Length: 363
Image (cartoon, rainbow, N blue to C red; front, side, top):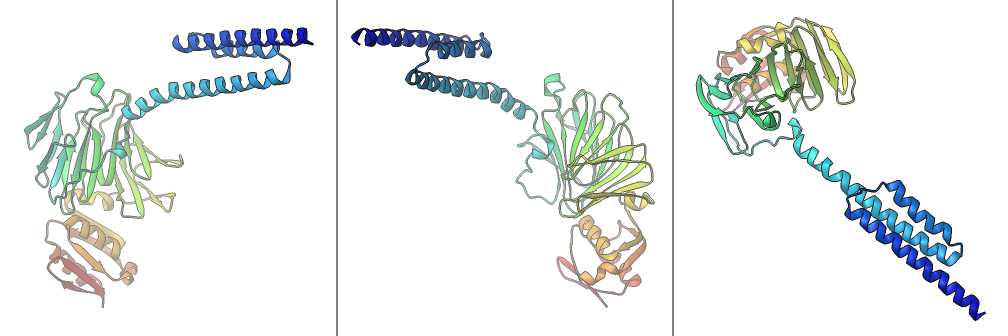
């Protein structure tokens, strides 16, 4: 009996020596930054399982294996999460660029979170190929065009209600930015794409570059083009978004990956998560850039919203006005009171004007 116990003890000691040797090998594997493959390490541990057949020893081996597996799992996660986190830091989404916490009734151009410039109404902002940023032909900043900076540093233009501006990018693309709009864009477009983010409404003339598609991103949809002219409206406080194509071709994609191709004189309307396409008179939707509001049986409540946004004045109205259609042209160079009075001559409404609010009621 003593001899059996002695033999059993010797076997156990031998096992623990072998197990310690295995774990030492595993630690060496870790220090050498995984120079040994995972399959080989697992094979070594499994050899230790085969040697011992007694239940008590098996349970101990299983415990060691479980610990080793957990260690491998955690090391694997760490090894993958670190580069993934770096990737997230490098690939900041345009939509995630924060809105500066500065309230202003002026057009604001931000060349960095801490550097901004107030821009006069209807001014033109130009980014030239030499890396300069010009406002009304005056240089206000210089951009680093180094390859490592491309697509990683962002500018943004914020246009309050009642204002408008134009931006010309270094690639030759031009955008007209309507009132109440925010546009975020890279300081320098990357080598393989040109992307901007829009909250509000812009009219674009995209310079054709087949090697670098131009993508307009919004909260609910993306528009992909090579070179074309179109209008996109995507105000955050509106339930509808639209794309109207003047010339060329575009592809509209929703967040759920649903896609639709658009041809000239077509409009895609996004409402309630669904897209619908129809033929339209495009000038009805782009006339704002020429200081006109061209209307073709437009519901009165939508007309009043556009006027409120364009002039930067609050307009309160009765919901019953939604059913009144308005057709004709309104000159946006006139003051708001005159424009509202013109509406009152063609629609059954009563106008009340206070210091900061216009109230519209049905007769």
